Length: 395
Ligand SMILES: Cc1ncc(COP(=O)(O)O)c(C=O)c1O
Image 1 (spheres, rainbow, N blue to C red):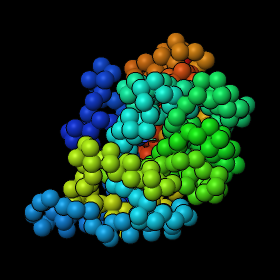
Image 2 (tube, rainbow, N blue to C red):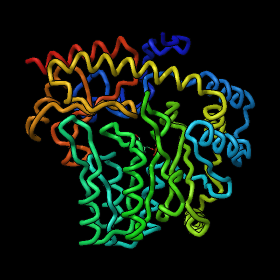
Image 3 (cartoon, protein in one colour):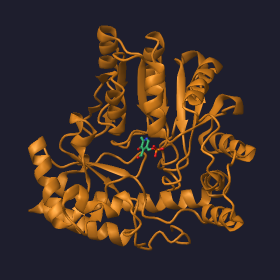
């Protein structure tokens, strides 16, 4: 029995808050009044402890320049150890701007124009934008989809590509958005071998680390044996798991002090080495990591039941292997078409029917024919959306 104490069934009106997910439909799609299953934030109110801490801070009424409290660093390292099972030392950590912004800056810092940066598509599309925007050479190592619908890294192809055209950096999405994979230790170890031998620095984006289901085990990149790792940076943040992405905050953990010093120097160059000076964001992050584990567990159980619902509604229409197993994230990855044209037709028909999902090809051409569906929403809203989706797929 899932606890309903946290009100996950409540349909909270988000329109009118200028949120991307609900307020931008006519601007982006030309349709109005859409049910939104696209952007990766949840339609759930965040954890009560987070609201309480922000409220307490608000009551104080003065929001002057603010350093990051030491207690927040303890909360972060405590969380990583307790929940994710790895030790990050406080002197290995830096506060960063949001994860996307950090990736943009790190690409510019760690490689020169023209250097190769590997991404594994289909992947969160800002990765591609960050590489292209920085005029670095995009090296795409496409993920492969097995017959059972499970996606894997193509490590042989990666090794060949690197041998042929070289690369300086690899952006790892761990767990992987989209395709909902939680990478296993063996896969990560093989990836680490390839990158270490080729002297490729790895940036592991672990924003989805705490969104992992049942038998799957999240393996933090920096928890791999030190001797197997290349130079590495892991990016962590509480914003995705606790649904506070508008309270931007992120941290980097480094494999070595030299790299940490280099990145600290980069932050100094941009005048941001002292952190965000964001008292409400600090309060929210600390409450997330210290006091909100029960909310997170209940939310995951609720989303898992949503996942069961999606599977039972769509499997008979599309076939059981059409929906990737939801190992992690709250983003279903659903095969609906065989070509770009068909994908576009299905997506447009869904908009006509009043539902808005993300197109697979947005995450790279390997994602062609898929839709990404955000299921972190109240059950009743999901049911209405699924009815509409099934009607379109049946037509
Ligand atoms: C893999 C991944 N990284 C980063 C982000 C966004 O991070 P931030 O809001 O800190 O820039 C997202 C948001 O969906 C994501 O899926």
